[in-house]
Length: 251
Image 1 (spheres, one colour):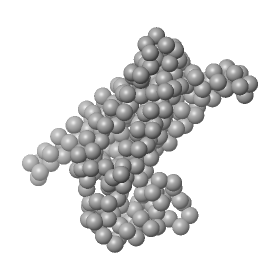
Image 2 (tube, helix red, strand yellow):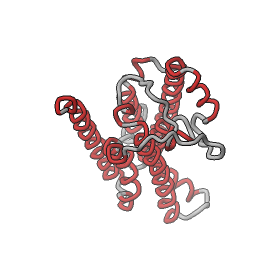
Image 3 (tube, helix red, strand yellow):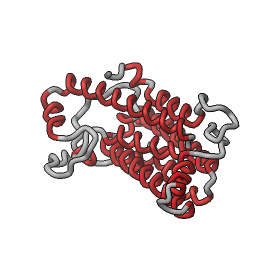
């Protein structure tokens, strides 16, 4: 059940492949209402239509309600990713290999052990509202299984490398569901807010797309906004890596 070292190294590519598969949904017949890009219906529209047909609310209310839920999920994902990265450090978060430095118990790590994985799950869940319904279902099942595999693999790695301090931390702090009461005291790590925001532009872009571009009800526009944020995140991460590599030369 644990992810291998190769899976961890390729996690961004695997996550991206799952998201693209959800949007593409190749098993759906082209020209069918549930087809992929350019389809006349997305999960967002499908949910709004079914709420209307069930007589829960009118479509005029259902559509913005579903959008608000999607934006709220995206907001939670962006907060968790930025907050977690600020305390763990962008270099550690986006490293290709598992790292076992000092145990981080500040910020969100006081309340849950895996805010970054939960944040990514929320980000994909928010994007799934723009996918065809069957694509959204497949993407969410795959991303959930993969994130759990990564978590189990990382927990096993840290348990071996950090020993009893990490095992005690595991006993005190829940894996994914935050617990605020009885949280351990902060360890005093200083957050890197600017570097965190710059390295987590993708979840921020998903939130902006769903919260501010959704008023057009144009799925393509929202997808373009997300793609732009993803591209910018790759550029900023590359620049930060280049800057970090140049630091010893300037010393």
